[in-house]
Image 1 (cartoon, rainbow over the protein chains, first blue to last red):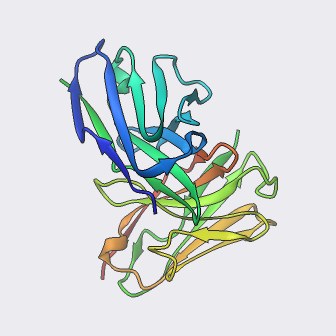
Image 2: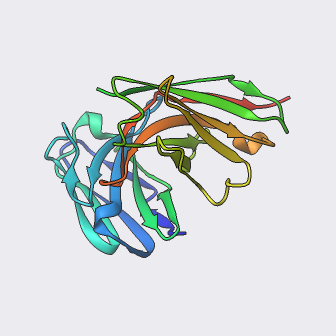
Length: 110
Length: 120
């Protein structure tokens, strides 16, 4: 099973700043199979990025994803108040077929 | 727009079986576009994939839960269900149903989630 490790655990920033969140895999992940989600308290996760770098429908362009192999990054270029939330990366592995999530990064207002 | 809604008991006794149903609206569960999934989240913790089912009945489960999990589908009702046996307090969580797009390896649609507490 592929383990995803996200860092940092908590990120404290101010609105307008740039956020960089990391997701590291225990073995190589196909870029096609890496996604990012945002979760706010009391809500279900919302898809932000899939295929490592493609934005989901309706996601603002301040959100971007990059990376390959074992290292992936979610970048929020200029933080808006509504961006403070928990972010998860997720991968699909084909052998055996299965899905794992990272433990999450909490983005909080400084 | 596809919508999902979980339903089932919010309280289950230890050693019993947790049973939840997800009703899909706004689209057909038989369309073949999605694998219908269950994901859970213990209070204050991260997300854990439980498993998914295709409309044909093919299933894939998280190896860590496989011995206790059964996911089934009822295409006539546009529903799919989760059964988790021999539950303990560690199974207390918000349970989400979701639609998984295998071509994009992403969960496109999520239910609102339902909290299931395991307690006597």
